[in-house]
Image 1 (cartoon, helix red, strand yellow):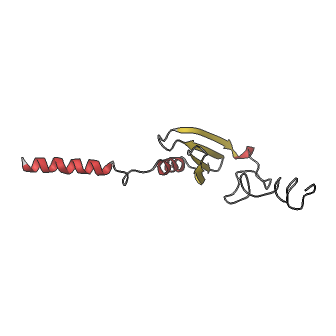
Image 2: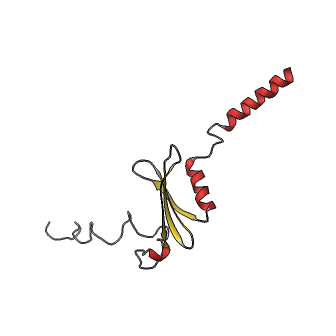
Image 3: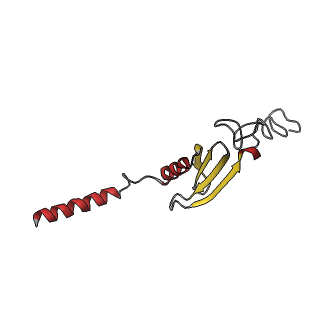
Length: 124
């Protein structure tokens, strides 16, 4: 009877440890692995204003944006765009290279020093 009780106790402890956060993969890790298993290279990850995870990925034919709820892991948004339909700031086809100027980064356009900007602009 002592051996049986010890075995059950060991199984219960192992079950508790296996479900602890130290052993569980995060939603971000699991989602990234799933996207990569589908043949995509994840080139950017981040968060939205609402705290959702956003992944940007590409393969030879498509670029993809996936938005996932951090709490539940539910996919809220998954858009595939053919590379042939994309134009980058440099005029070439395909998604921008990681680190290239683009949305949300400094580049040509309105702002300080640009058309209507404050640095050296008229009317101030």
